[in-house]
Image (cartoon, rainbow, N blue to C red):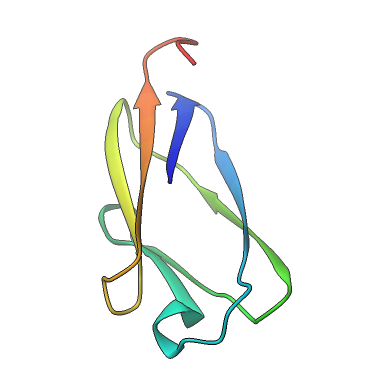
Length: 77
């Protein structure tokens, strides 16, 4: 998954876990110091504050499932 966002604004990502593999119990944003527990079948809003433009990876707890948050200067979505 790739999510685009504008620099200087908080980003809220809604995760919904639809399977029961143990590695997907948590989402981790390593470079942003953010983690969240993802219960099966429930939406979880995760708010992150990227410090500036760049690419911020998010993964499952076991680093097998991955996505990227691409933060752009200005609105370039």
